[in-house]
Length: 182
Image (cartoon, rainbow, N blue to C red; front, side):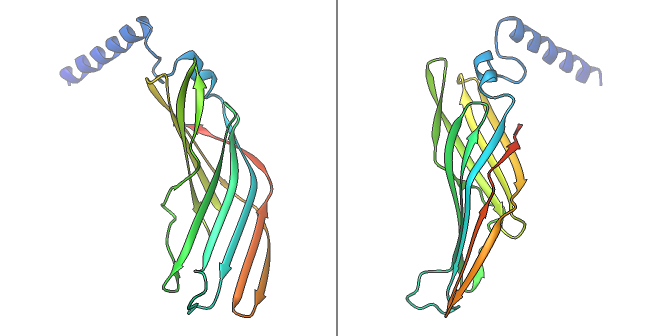
């Protein structure tokens, strides 16, 4: 127990020494990085969904598929990117991709004259319309900024059945959702 207290005191002392020496704060962000990362919201727009199905034995027909596409803007730094999540039916069953992170288009952000890659990923729970977005970037090569947001979409849909084809098209209103720094 005494050893643990000494170790904790040592870690706290080291933290104070780093802060006093001008190293990044406990969050690890320089002032320029903090300005470009807090507070933030994600604006989701142009949200479209398309589900295309043919008979269970399509032969030469395209595979049954579902796509959700949207644009996202991080309002803290105005980084904008596009995302497209696609699920495909295999052997008559939709793949369970509820834990899968789809990669969105990569972008970059300029901080203090340097460019840093911004990685954005999205995960969708198709039945619940729950969309989670994760955006991550390294700043000042000293810290990683990660923003995560989850929202439930409220789409308006139309369905068309023509012979063996089934098409469901949906759009959801543009929304702005809070993103949490992690």
